[in-house]
Length: 317
Image 1 (tube, helix red, strand yellow):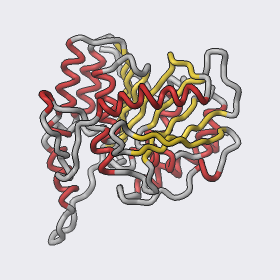
Image 2 (image 1 turned 90 degrees about the vertical axis):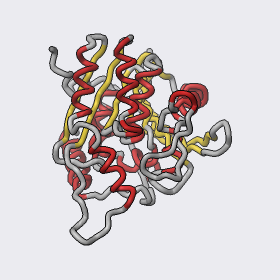
Image 3 (image 1 turned 135 degrees about the vertical axis):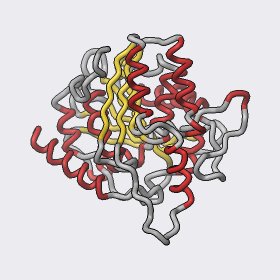
């Protein structure tokens, strides 16, 4: 079974290295459609309080009986794309470790991403209620992270707990890109909501590094926490001379360049130095931003199942 896991992981990484991130890609068939011997899948629809965003919640519940204390649970943002990246070899591996319930929080669309909805849901509000305009696509509204986190706590978690016995002491949250930004915002503002936070290539550059200011406030009065921070090291190559670059890509490149190249590593080190929590950090030098989504999924699954060796802790000072 371990061989199958490694082969599946190798395929995912090789595919990811070659893939170009495309937020307009259709989702296509997933394991929820094909089925698995290790998990059973079900879908639920949830709407935002204002009725403007519609979520497709895909639950993957282990076929294995729940332990006496209930299943651990992993909540995955950008659930459509995460479900599309999930492999059956990964579920087989989880079945041998003490499998968690997987909650894919996606959107009611046939695309991998709902770009407008995630731009609102995954970005924090600014102080004083200042309107939030997306750094990359100026037409998108942002700042709805707290509204989304309320929905997660008040609607989505109860829905999950009604479908399977959950160990509320073992809840994990994973997010990539803007989802990673939301994961960090949740940790810094609601550290008790989850027991483990896993942020993959988070958008630290958003609003000039706003999340880094939240981190400083959190470190000034820290709580016990468990954070895994995973980052890619390869930048997308600029277009050949004479060819125009997509304006959104150009804007994102400029925003990233405004922060230190090792901003994520610095953040991990600063958080580890507080001595109030467990911090794990890994850099994938061969992977760019988009491919970090499938590459980070494997470690997230294993960590949520209790495999502490999946990512080594930050070295002690």
